Length: 171
Length: 209
Image 1 (cartoon, rainbow over the protein chains, first blue to last red):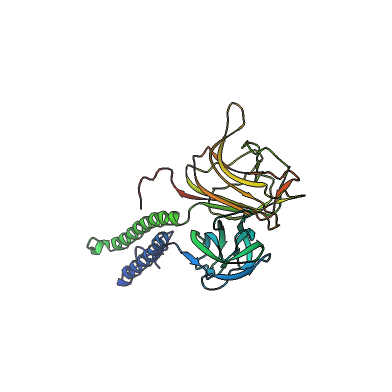
Image 2: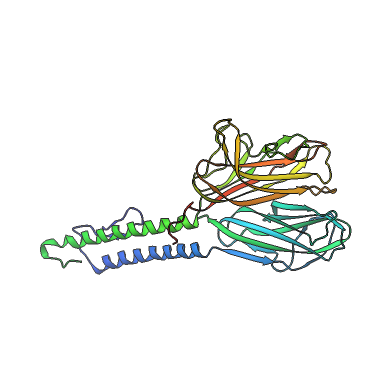
């Protein structure tokens, strides 16, 4: 009956056992399989899952009601469980100067708001935006989306740039 | 591998045993190095209760006129922790100091006026690395990052996120400080405030893998 090493269970024959080619093959295959795992760890260390999504233009968003970003590239599905650093950059378009007086962008995990950023735009003169970033502890399959709130008069169009990068893998 | 003799066939088994142990030792070290590179020490916590009743203030010139957030009495959920690295004080008055290294540290808060809101008044969040002055016992700030927003006339709420890269040395400890200019009433921080820290690298990188 072969014995095994204490950590990775590499098999080896005990003294007194009949040595066959299978003893060599079993050990070689076990080491090979473990090296494949390590190679996968190396790949993950060098190529962490990450994404940048620039959403489609969300047009004519009414004031006073939070709107979930929709259209192409408006969400991200988590591929590997872990802690992700997620950022959302809100860009506002198609507004009349001085109409919007406050904007907010929030990051959602499976529909639940987690963190966000708001900006007072009263008396502004530059292109308005809001930027937020924070960690999300995710499991594979979680959906990350964003939601935008604009206050004031009129309507506005917006895009959200959503970035997400794996920081720590959860086995 | 030595050629076996009839008197020493057991040597083959012993040599395979030695080979297996040698391979395990080498692969284990490599695996631990790679997993350390992928799974950096990280800590994430979220409050499950409001923070503070931060009284109305008007003096914005002094950094020390700030309130320290995430104190020991604040109820929190630790969302993730894969090492001893922590932002949580286990006892009142004890502030954990991250081991020497470069860290990414961040915070999210949603402050709100408990009573009347002063439109266009400021709310400010600050991340600092601090030490205790051995002579006075007071705080001494070193690295500082700050974010300020101004509430508007509409009640969208104020949401601030701030993150930065800071160096800690096993002595300096991180603090999250809040200030506001809402003179008409006190403020608190809503449930769901987040603080996090993750280690980016050693203080001195001796070799790049």
